[in-house]
Image (tube, rainbow, N blue to C red; front, side):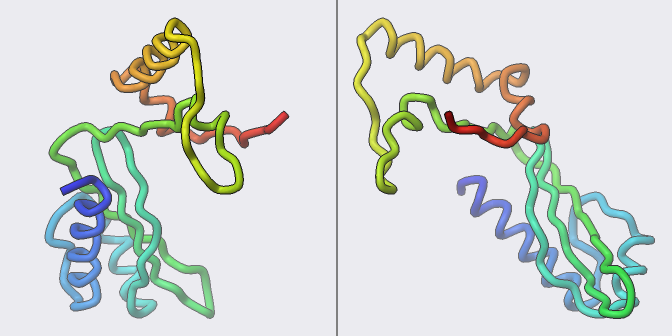
Length: 138
């Protein structure tokens, strides 16, 4: 099972628990925030965020008369999560919605692949879990 399927399955199980009025079957959460949210009504699905060692599932308890309550459940994962950025050789060749590749001399291709592989170890990948500045095309 890939990460997307894994996260969706676990998030849906927790959502079902919340809708049924139960505590989440797994994960770390703040019971005080859950109590506050339940006082506002039924939950809605929120965003799913990733950290290198966790999946953060957000559930929203909306309230038209006051502010909504954001309830989060942090799930431990079976292995480290890695963000794979789009390699620069792909970005250079996007045209009319098609993503292909690009041509490079062998020495340049080896350099690009080495840069891409450097993104996998924890110290090279952690930066992708931090807020990213907006991309600027020149």
